[in-house]
Length: 330
Picture (spheres, rainbow, N blue to C red):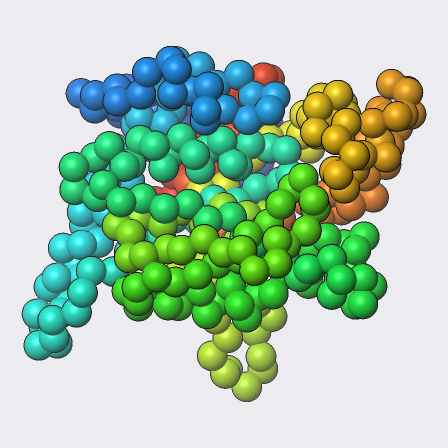
C-alpha cells in the first residue's frame, strides 16, 4: 500500500511524477483513506448537504462518507488526546485550568473550496458526543476595512498577508485559546466586499474552533535577535490545506464569477454590481484578469508555499473530488 511509504503530495504525486526521496507525509489514495472510516456512523442526510455545499461544488454523500467521515474520526481522536494531555499537564502543574478549545486551521486558495470543507467538518464534529460545541470563524473578518486598505494603497492586494489586521487576529486567537468567555470577531460581507461596521460574532468557549482563511499557515518573518514572534498557526492544534492544480482552481474561480454575475451581482447594492451588465465574453475576461492579477499571485507567493506546514493535505481533482490525502507523520 502506498500509505506505508514516504511520498510526495500534491497534484504531481497524483500524476505519478514524484521526485522527492523523503517526505514527512504519508500519502493515501482515496479508497485507502475511505477504509479508515471503519464503523464511524454517518450523521448527515442528503438535505444537510444543500446548506453545506458551495456555489459551484457538488458535495455528494459519497464524498462525505469516503473523505470527511474518516477525517472527523481522526480529529475526534486528536481532540480526545489533547483533552487528556491538558488534564495531565494541569495535574502536573497543580492547577485547575478550564477547558482549552481545540483549534483547527483550514487554508488554501480562493475558490478551492475551503469554506465547504470547514462547514462539513463543523457539522460532523458537532455530532460527536465528546465535543458538541463547534464554532467556525473565517479570517475575512480580520481584513482591514476598505477605507483603510485604500489609505494604505492595498485594495488591489486584498487577501494578501499585509491586507489583514494580524494583530487583532492574534489577540482573538489568544483569548479563545486562553478559555476566555464571549470573545468577539468582526464580520465580513462578501456582498458588500467589506467589513460590516459594528457587527461581530461571538465565540464563547467552544470545544472546537475551526479557523478558515487564505493565509492562516503563513509564518512571520523571524527576527535575527530571536525575539518571540507569534504566528497565527501557533494557536492551531491541527491544520488542513486544500490543494489542487492552479489551472483547475482558475476554472473554478471563473465559473463562480460567471454564476455570481447572474445572482448576487445583479443586486444594485452589491459591490460588484457593475459586472452584471458585462457580456459573457467581457465577464470571462474580467474574471481571468482578477484571477491572474490578484488571486494567482497570492496563491503562488503566499498561500502555496505554506502547504508543507499543514498537518493534512486534501488534494482535489475534477469537480472538486478529493483524489488523495496526505497526513503528516507523527
